[in-house]
Image 1 (cartoon, rainbow, N blue to C red):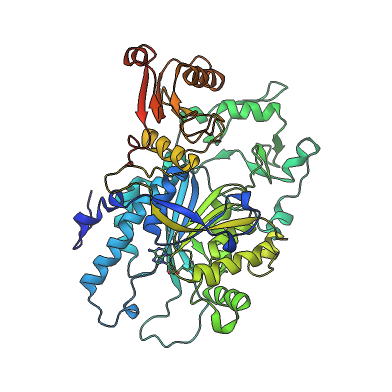
Image 2 (image 1 turned 180 degrees about the vertical axis):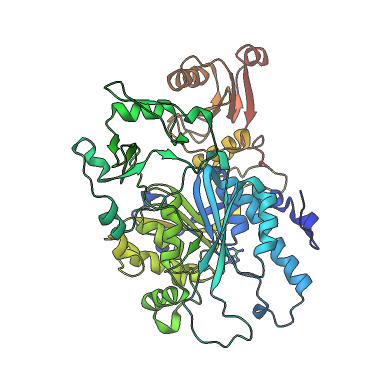
Length: 518
Ligand SMILES: C[S@@+](CC[C@H](N)C(=O)[O-])C[C@H]1O[C@@H](n2cnc3c(N)ncnc32)[C@H](O)[C@@H]1O
């Protein structure tokens, strides 16, 4: 596969592995609202912040939207294109690698970028995310016109490069129908599926798809009549039979006598998701000017953020690829647009911003959102306020210079690192039991900080026959019939090596045997 080369490429590929895992420390004074919502605002360099998130969120993020600084000449007094271009690529590469690790299997990443870098970024993202996972390059119409100071062209657009984490796992993307279309097309109502809303009739036959012989079959009506498609149906025979039984098909007869089969396309599908329009590859209607007005309304003319994205643009992105409750992430948060939009749409969010505006803009903006701020997309989504977030900064490294975990670490943090180093996946369970979970035929347990209720020094942290029995009971409860090996992390083991071998238990000593996952 063709790849891109730049001055420091060899160092940059793999740089993410060398970034230390840091702890995240909450600043309660800057947090706001309900602390249990899971929303996180992090101030710090996103390279370290993304790495700190891995043990807790690897594979969990449904949508990443980022708007990194563009590599514009205006930012540099003495611009050396070769050097600055390399620096920009060096900045992007390791961050993209970490973002890929955080993305859920059915997730997607969307990156705003201008014309100068888009083609370089495309080649880099092809390499990091896989060329076959490229979805599209959205053209975002950023402006509706304006003066003509430019010498050659009126620059009216930017790009949003979009990749799936894994194309084969990505669900269909849909936008809800616009309200006018809803009235015009969704005219029918069905008492049977009240919760799915009104429906429109769509032809089941298609001539535009590639020919697939298994989609050419007769639909047999209750009276025994058979209807054949001109070329083929859109659905498998099994799906069509189910629809017939469910009363989801309508047969009408044209004046020519030809019988046509339509299916009822409901406003909501069987899972409750709204299907309307396919997201178009040109996004218009949300302009930079809107972003500036929104920022001015939030912060005043003096303190408004320069060129924030309009809430409507981020809304369109989240609307097409996420559902309520999904986790979304922006690691170049700027003035907090992504977090504000996610919050108003009922998505869980993580926002990372290294500038002081994390404190002066993002946190106050999100506090206003919690209080029911009515700018941006608020009216469109019926936002009334509520929720909360926790503000964090980066703390000390979780591992010392020899790669050993700090001994003063909390149970939940240690559990996440133990689990992540063993499985490469995020630990998202409760800390009430020493069993962290079962993964790929291996059970993993952690005895630490009196997790068994005994808070004396060393109490409950030692592997004995009694603690082993307790762990085994928990494994049997959560994974009946489990027959794999068991790895136990603890302060000490009182079991003889022969017993450990017989019981198929691998003992690892905390904190020394907990190693950072590269
Ligand atoms: C173009 S702005 C994003 C604007 C944002 N989309 C909005 O609507 O407000 C890029 C942001 O990324 C931040 N940034 C740049 N490098 C960063 C890094 N290494 N870690 C965290 N934030 C970074 C900058 O401080 C800036 O606020």
